[in-house]
Image (cartoon, helix red, strand yellow):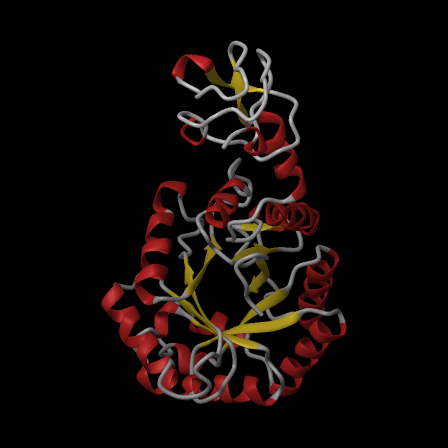
Length: 332
């Protein structure tokens, strides 16, 4: 599902649908039109997430859906060629999502210390994303150890850097921490972007993350920013999301592969720009080539260039005219 050479783009709905299944489906279709890879939701019951006195408890109640409704949304994603993912906030939600065909689960930072939930997810063999927002490295290491304790050893587990502060200021993004945590934990890592949706760097920040090795980008979507629905602050509208994904795909073309190989156009560049050993004056057949006889200069020669050290002190096997390149077959 995740690889270093192609950025996996997650269209994050979060709670912007405000409990409206029809709106959630519209946003799924928008993600498909933008050619995203996945849609991510947040799945919970109010009682597994908060106590009744918590200020958003009534909102959480409003956003609860049944297993049948979740299956309906997951099937909609699958029909459009999208993966369906979700944050989970409790054991019941995790088990329910697994039963209705969720493709991957994200551990929200709020549950980084929730050992029962982590142990349940460890045994599911589903790809996992692990949020690092507001977490220390030591906490992350413990969570990774639990998540790796069961299931397939090669099961995808991706660190997701980022947090929501409605919106997150660019100076609070700290992308170096993303790479540091990813390297320390030995995980693929991604960036969950929460910058203001109208900020002039709302794409550039993700481009920077991709350049630093992020293989997953998560970006919020909303049906219309002007409506200021739930979680709109860092979201793009559907038209903006199409442009966003197209730009990410352009960046992917620049990634290439971590190989010591020259592609054909780079081979041509090498031939055109590398300097060859050329004679500065007539070098007679049988003479030993010395420093004053040669120099490195560009020349129209279809041969692998040599260093001066390969030529100096060698005997010429033919007469070599001034400005003529000296090739391997011209010397002893």
